Amino acid sequence: MKTLLFIYNQNAGKGRLKHQLSSVINRFTQAGWLVTAYPTQSKGDATRAARELGGSFDRVVCSGGDGTLSETVSGLIDLPSPPVLGYIPAGSTNDCAHNLRIPPSISKAVMICAANGEPLPLDIGRINGKPFIYVAAFGAFTEVAYDTPQDLKNTFGQLAYIMAGIGQLTNLTPYHLRVEYDDTVIEDDFYYGMVCNTYSVAGMKGPVLPSDRVVLDDGLFEVVLVRKNIKLTDLTNVLQSLVRNIPVSTAAVVSFQANRVTITCDKAIPWTVDGEYGGTFAVSQIENQHRALTVIHGTK
Image (cartoon, rainbow, N blue to C red; front, side):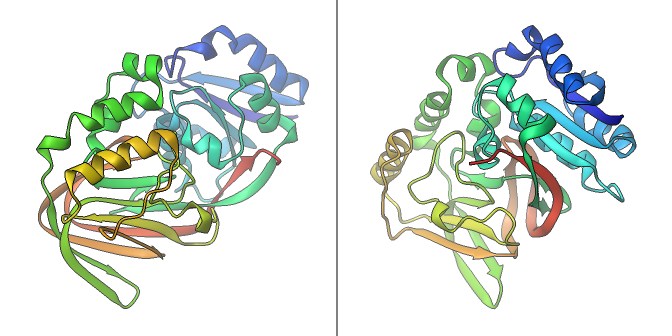
């Protein structure tokens, strides 16, 4: 019988998984899996469980928000032969579920992870060695992802991020950066930067996110930088357009694709990695690990 490690965060989102746990395990069993269930106990526990236990299983499935998925990836990525990874979204925004074509229905997501999904390769990023599955960002509004209270996220969803972001508009401070990629060097003042492999961030398709160029296993990041010379009124318009998915064009936005990016600043920059605090660095070396994991995707 095939073996499956089920790592889950029972407190993610509105805690809806805990009410369906028996049904989830039963569905896995019906699909031919011998299931070991592991409820995470604290922040970082999914990483430890995936690293210490994951190599002994044919498949690892995690459930929670994007943070739980990111932690699980961090635990699996350094295993000699990582098992196939599945994801059941149960968080507040679930950007990665959108990327992987996983529906919000837990019962449907279970069947994709257990039987109906397609195992496909996925690029994984690293910032100074720390893995991330879809985004690393710095500057304006990046603290919103990990500072916004969970109950606010549960009540308002993606709007919670916008509400918190608008409250930061009067406190913006740019960073003077040297950005190096391929044979190109950019030196300027920037309010915001994002290195990502995703179609959406915080549940929204960004007006400046080059989602038409996103391929999840092409070995390339999509990079977006917002220069200092953007006006605060423009930033407000960008935030509002995020909610409505209305495209916005501005000369202050730089976007490109790259496999490796080095960002150097004269002071340490705090980063958000997959929606959580990811460390503070003066020199940030970001690289794409091409097709580093195999992850279950839903079918179109």
